[in-house]
Length: 479
Figure (tube, rainbow, N blue to C red):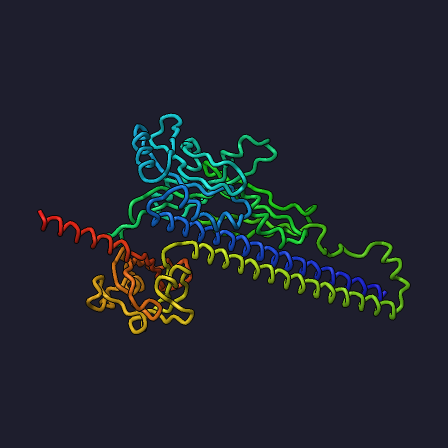
């Protein structure tokens, strides 16, 4: 009787321990899933912000330049992405004038096709398919309430916006079982202004269509290892929540599902992670056969049974450590891919871009910046730049006042646009005339008090202007 009681108590204790381990394991998997989805959402948000900034400074914006700016995203082929689209607005009754303006500014022979008579139309001007589909230029998107609300909110907030869940226009011709809830990430595109504090003129919007299940599958499939079911909940039209099944690995276990929140732009998704019966679950207890067999078990058999429990727990612990190690390696590989994508986007920008921290230390610069300014891998921060990268006024006659430098002003929290200055460095001893725009970094970037500056080489443009003025002066002198 004593042996049976000890065996029963040990079994129940082990069962409770296994359930606790299963709960800990489920919590860990839910945390990994939330981290991966957060990283994926942040990667898309950063990419869309970079795209909007690149499109804003591109003059003129043509089909060729739009394709070149979208090239890194097209090459990356991100999971769930359907295409990158640039959209402009036109009030009803002014579609013809907007179409003429687009054609005169490099948009090609775009033909706008309005649908109905809403107060405002939203037309696709450029489109870069990412899923092998066909680009539809000139299409009116005003009939899609989800897109209308996203464009309006992005214009009002001047920031990145995620739309409510809806069925993409291009997917509505598919069979119902192939349609899936989708959304768009959209960012307003502004033409930079020379007025401090003014974001510039709204040029349009750039958005990328995303199929939510494909996006989540691409981010989470490898991390689940076929042991958990995952779904996510997001806001749909009219404020109704939309549940999107992502991964179904098998029947659900008796463990309660774990729910975690993932921030995506201005919204929050809820991930529901449910353990399955394929996982290593605890047993419910001893059966009748175990009780009958245990009645005749000697103390040696009891010791062997307890030893088996200990060894099984050790084996499961080792498996969990190995699983956690693989998840960590997967997360590290994902981070490397994100860094590579950011570097590709930065290096695709034709203007020089430099990012510094609050003390002026150089954090990031692109390939155009190294060629334009002669920056090397040991480039110092903004403090000692005056010694190595001598900065002058645009005419090269006097040193540029340090407190008026766009990058220094941006670190101090002040924006500046298109400031002409002459920069001489060991890599460019003849000097280069650049137009510099500086902006403080948003705290969401993770750099407190940092700043970003864009350098555009205007040496040739200013020289041409000077030559034209000289020719004009000589012509007037002759007259």
